[in-house]
Length: 564
Image (cartoon, rainbow, N blue to C red; front, side, top):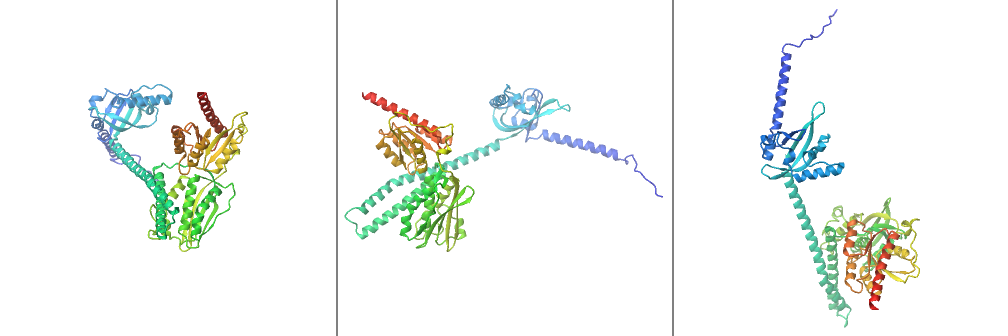
């Protein structure tokens, strides 16, 4: 039979002494750690009593602030070594936040900490010699075992080095932005300056070409070369100008519903003659009349024409170009331009959208700048769309763009039962409203709106130059002006009309899809009578037109009175 044995209840000899020694060692180690922390020269450690009077001021605080501990302990509060304006600002901010009054001083600095909320903030410390430096300070409330507040602990580090790096970084970024802006401004200025002599070159060359007596064959070839080089140079200037505007952030777009069928028809009419000269066949899709996409109409045309011209230029003789439209995903339309050219290698496809990279075509028979596709890509991104390409060597290439589908602008979308259509004003004299707008859908919409007023007649102009001419000839009572127009912008056109004594008095209302408050403010500061954003709210538009008509009628009445 075995015996049950139990372990002895008393510790082995020496165990108690070892435990006590361990405790003493731990206490000594903890004390050493505390001393190391308090004597650290890298951190300012300041402890206060519950009233905010400094009780502990470590070596790091002495080193950082220049005071000896005996100069501050039981003498001052931490708020006395902080920037007083920052302390006051903190008190004001807390007072507003809590809807109560908090006096500037240590109470403002320690307010959150006293409520158990860790508070870390940036402030300016003031050394004994009066010099200042930025610091990051953490404030913690200290409590006894009964949770009574007994003081505050402030741990701070000198933030000067990080601030210097921030300043240097900001200066470097500002210098880079300034240099980039200077480059863009230079390119923009030079592009405009180059247009003036180029206009004379192309103008007089065309006069010589069509003049009498007829040119000799040698003269004809020379003039053809001048014109060819001149038009190519104009294309280069335009592309550089567009790229400079995009990079400088100065290119303004008006993204709104655009009829894709109308844009494709206009593009087709612009490229068909070049296609015929090269015996290139073209096929365009038939789209429903209500096919609309979200885009800037002028820039969408520029994108599609660039892709079409490239498909014709780099095609094989008697080749073919086809335009296809299909829904890429719900709410997104893809427009593809397919050619039967030589095609591209995968490496060339990967380099397509690099500036000035002509993919080895520099010595080819076709002239080019290597900028067109870069501008096209950036325009698509600015309009919220995408662009890409697929190609197979020896078969051809497909360049595609994708953009969001949109609903056609219409009265039904903007008028509710509580907002009746404006009606004709009885007995009112007939007055002309000129609308300068390159989007036919928008022009038709405003025409429908004004048709409810028997006393208003709408006159439309598709670009600013024509609009300025119409304004000078017809002298309308009010002008509605789109901002993003081909060629001269709406803002530039408004300024030209203001400078002309014949049209200076006519109120001009901006009618634009640029609805950012900054754009509206700039438009009003530039001199527009009013600024109406699209989609159009009918009563808002009519109220603006009525206000403008009142100004016009008052001016005309004053003039008539002065004459009599």
